[in-house]
Length: 348
Length: 93
Image 1 (tube, each protein chain N blue to C red):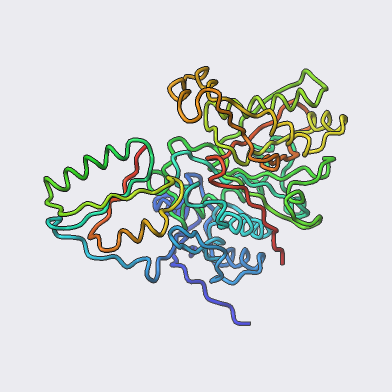
Image 2: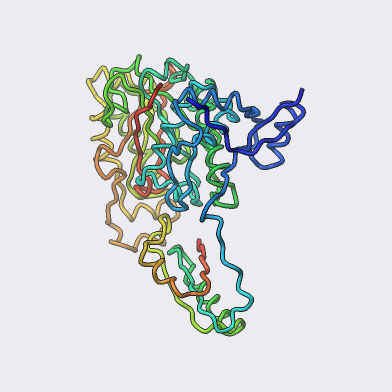
């Protein structure tokens, strides 16, 4: 088979340091240094995902802009990805191009969300993803660079440049990278991707347009209902101070709290049903957070809002270090204007 | 030894790059104003409309509105832009 030539313009630079400075000057990075994308590395990424350079991975439908494999691979190399990460990057972008993700709206909005990525299945261990200590922070090359590759594609291919197409007022640190694996080995629960229709043993990504994580703590109970009450309270607070619209919330449950839920026989579904029932606010409660001006609007002070449209809106993920009674929620960008999408990862 | 590196940006090709020539004057023209449905945009566009009519001699202003700020304008809104000489897409907030 004849190898397709790459189509991108090339630049000759003295060395890798100079290349980095050149890319910084062009505005082609997120501000951090990049790995200079040479043809050899870009081809290795394409090969690892079984892609030809001209293959269209997806289309951003509002501006009809294609995500061409060659450009995705260039940005993945720049982000620091190893070729073995490329199938994950591709699956994330395919998920984001599904209409329900609302790629244009969620990346352009003043609300400033970031694609929150959860990886399930055997590829997590193959490529060394982190699902435990400091899972929402730094620590693993795969977590860090897969999320970063998505950001660089948004910047360089879709033009999501702050102040231009990206109109985020604040943004959040997850816009550098926001990618975790689920701790399937140490969890009694069904992995997220399987709950969302992916067969066991198949690797998959789930992507959500998420706001910054909100950490909570409850180390003073062994009662699963009390833990779920803390979660529901955090979500209610987000509804009052940020956005009341219902949609996909993610809940990350580390081991210490997982063990309490598991000892009581609680599955993910039990948590979802509790949160569906109790993560609700009434319009009058806005008066307690400085928003009394909207108490009498709409259906009046007693109008009720639920955080979830159905219990299934809550994505429960087992991840985090072994010690500490913490958990975190990731709120949706704007209710159900963007919905979580799960895609199988195609490996060669 | 130097290195050769690749351009990471979208390479525009085909119809996306085709643009019409800019208008030399707005006198006698029809201009559409697209409201993105956010707070305060209506008041802002009221003022823009007044300026277009009184200061720039615009003949007709077509007021359009997106039903949802976070989604693209639906086809029927785009259809009403047909025949307009220019469109101002305003972002209120």
